[in-house]
Amino acid sequence: DAGVIQSPRHEVTEMGQEVTLRCKPISGHDYLFWYRQTMMRGLELLIYFNNNVPIDDSGMPEDRFSAKMPNASFSTLKIQPSEPRDSAVYFCASRISSGGANQYFGAGTRLSVL
Amino acid sequence: AQKVTQAQTEISVVEKEDVTLDCVYETRDTTYYLFWYKQPPSGELVFLIRRNSFDEQNEISGRYSWNFQKSTSSFNFTITASQVVDSAVYFCALSEEQTGANNLFFGTGTRLTVIP
Image (cartoon, rainbow over all chains, first blue to last red; front, side):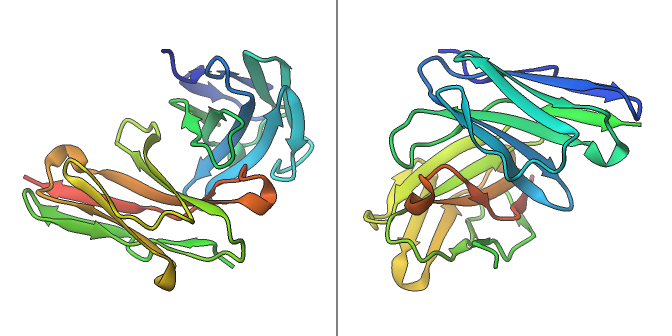
């Protein structure tokens, strides 16, 4: 069984450029989560989807961040324009709808904005 | 207020020693879930265990064991006979039923170094 797949694993870009991070959840999982990990703030939830619909985006830092889930097997997190303070590791996770079920995490995308 | 507190920022032990990682949580919900994740140097987050608030039975899995005590709001993790491969950052996390158990509140993590 394939786990949560994220791409790219590493991304280096220059300030002002658009960055798109991709995630393929585990098949059959109907919840998808995007997290950001930084030294200062630790792991924080950015947004999550249920059945492809965004449910809570209160963690999205600002309008430069947007996320979509066009179908059950694909989601993107876009930053436009990117800034150096966006440098972090971005994780995608998915789970089934059973209450309190475990979230399975992808390997993460390490983003560096120069 | 921090929902999950991992007071130990870093711990170093010599191989084969036992080590306990502390986790204290805070919630007003009666139904909640507690988790431990491991983040090795490679960076991925690996699920270790999940516990719901109605199940206080301690659990053992090989060299790993977990002690859940509602009376002290703690969910501690013990590694017996530690090995170098146990070196990682360990996160404790909480989700609450009242928010649909969707938001995982993570502690700040404990970095464990096992010295050969």
